[in-house]
Image (tube, rainbow, N blue to C red; front, side, top):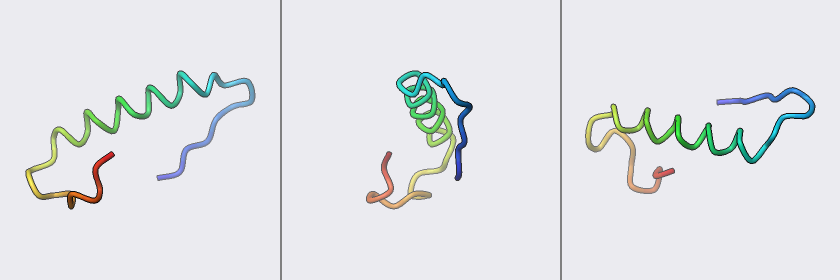
Length: 40
C-alpha cells in the first residue's frame, strides 16, 4: 500500500488514523490469514 499526503498534513494524526484503520481491517481477517511476523 502506498500512501501520499498533502503538504501541511499533520503526520502525527495521519499515522494514528492509518494505524487505527489497519487494526480495524485486520480484525475482519480470519485467524491465520496473516503470519505472526506480520502483526502491525
